[in-house]
Length: 115
Image 1: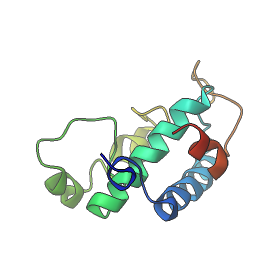
Image 2 (image 1 turned 180 degrees about the vertical axis):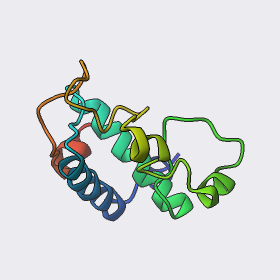
Image 3 (image 1 turned 120 degrees about the vertical axis):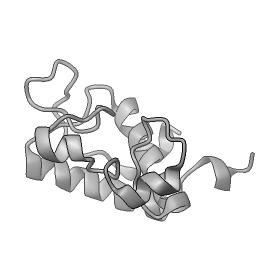
Image 4 (image 1 turned 180 degrees about the horizontal axis):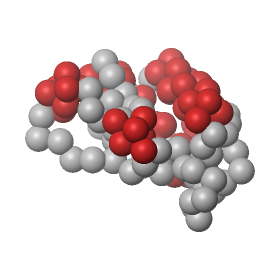
């Protein structure tokens, strides 16, 4: 596979990163203590944004990704996150979550280095 098919574009990666930081701050949630988890989830969301036009949750299996995007249930932030602060991907973690870190920010360079 070439790099274009295995990685999200830097433009989408940066857009999703900025969204994630803003959303974490707005909701009082935090990124995972392991920055590798945060980087992988942001990469997956950005790849779906490139491929499907929406940041579909990368941590689930879909029979039909296009249909899921149209339904919007699993587009980030997904309905469980918006309604109950439940993030299956461990991107947005509540203060009482044992896996949450102290950060609500991650640098683009940090994500790129973890690819």
